[in-house]
Image (cartoon, rainbow, N blue to C red; front, top):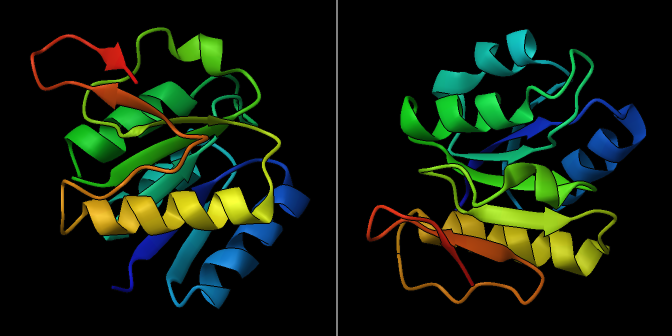
Length: 141
């Protein structure tokens, strides 16, 4: 299944590499956003969003992820060097993976987030720390 994927990352070389991998996988990278304003410009178009936490306009990634997931129904995975900033997680989002990550790990995470859009029982990649909101409280697995 092909998805429209938003890349929320302020380091252009990292964002461009992610964009290239997403496109090679057959998905549609709809844009690169380096801050909250540009990310929300793409909000209604994204099926999946890969979101860094600390962006050009500060630590706005958590809020961006929450809006994309809760208001726009995007499948959100946080990609960050600072996963502790998420605490127990963000309601409605899938989970977090620590950067840096290998190309294979990125491919696995994109494939999982895409699969979750159609099958909730998709098998998560090893490096992805999931947020479980099934009982209203976060449980990470």
